[in-house]
Image 1 (cartoon, helix red, strand yellow):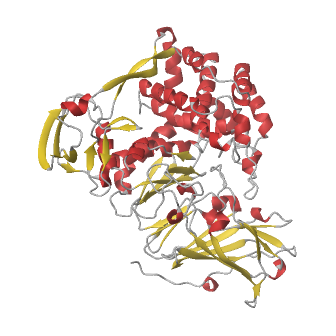
Image 2: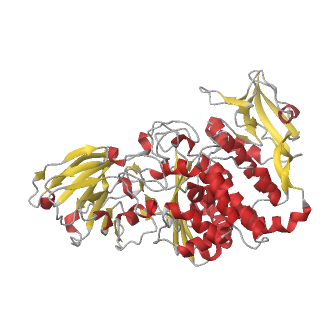
Image 3: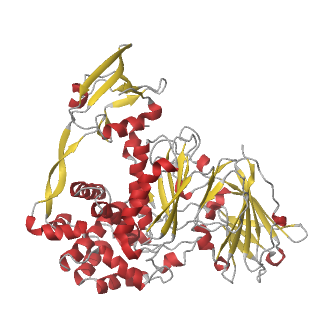
Length: 629
């Protein structure tokens, strides 16, 4: 899972329905779980789910919704969104059910059950956290792992929130599932699952086990999708934009460029034949999704961002966030422990190796960009330097494996974000060790290829055996690093590892956004009543703003002929991030109640910050192998 920081955003603030009864559909085997989700009949933002269970051998069975799902590392209790669960026998008589906790119902007359029905609430419009970026209530489900029910317009189906599983002595979670979805004819269901029904209003899917059902989200919306093929893999890109301001066609170049570069970087390690990217754009002025980022699956990813973002800003987020999710096809989707292979949805047991699942994945999401020429070395070093700074604000002496194993509880839970910071840096250091010891011939991607060949999708490893296997496939120095800095609590001396590649700490020049000194220090604010954007009065402004003739209290009405207010503030900040020195800027402002025009060439403010650069040219060849090999 990748939670996008969206640092700039933190500053900005009818189709015809066909009604089909389940009884009219083809009969299905009673050796599988038969599920029908009816998207035609929405009641109070809820949809009806009907389950025809298999024949039970036990007198009593328990029906569960997941407490936790793979990739989220949080307890979300999807059973809280289930209302009015009922069980019936063959004659339609209601049977006794008993809810025993958030996610579980005991069904004491298991052998008599012919049908189970319940209503499912969505999660997007119940999120309590209102605001930009990552602001969300503590009880909210991370939006890419959540659901949406918007009648006749959009349904985001993360299937684990709609469909549960049965538990008795026969391990029923491993049984096949037959899923039928009744939907308005005008809506298209984008998914990597294969629809076995060719009609416009019924979709039918078969999966071999519950995990496969939960691992394949489906988004229903007006058809707005594009397809392309890269290295034998068909990619489906589906977009839901409430106002239609963004389209899959316009955003496709950003995704396609990124995925082509990723496939070139990964080579033979990725064997996917299908991959689906579901992009849901949230209307943050309404009750809608507020947790922005993405959640990975074996053959797809769900992505949620605010619709108010500009096309260019969305493109940049697609590059960083979707690339992270796609690299999850390496780990944990292809390389993982038994805790993940046999995931316990009710009482999850977590793996020790988030350093690999999330950390190495995040490292790859940055490394491939320098490897494929999408960023330059200075930006790559800058990103790693930022991760070092971010990691320093968290507990740098906590065992990473211990934190991973206990990530669902405190004090480890609050350290989870370090998987994207220190976790990525762990991946970088391992990469550097392998490059140094192999004279640049191999790196961490080579290690992951070997681990993928050793294990793979259907063969998990034992948690306590991974370090020895990694050491066997690489060098003793890698094993010692894992023991000391990953299992142990000793802080990593990053400068020593950079130096192995000829890189040392130095001062680097950084250009400020014209309207932001930094994320926490803006030069602008907004009027909550008029929605106007105003230069904050009474503070020292940047030379950039002073040179343009702006003063505290000025209201910015237009920039280069485009009007701005709080509704498109993010666009203004994103545009300013791309400004160049000597670029001509025309402003329309309001000062002391009167409109005024300003015009001038930009003289952008720069500052010196701590960073890294290549200084030891004797290591140039090794450095090239690291970044370009």
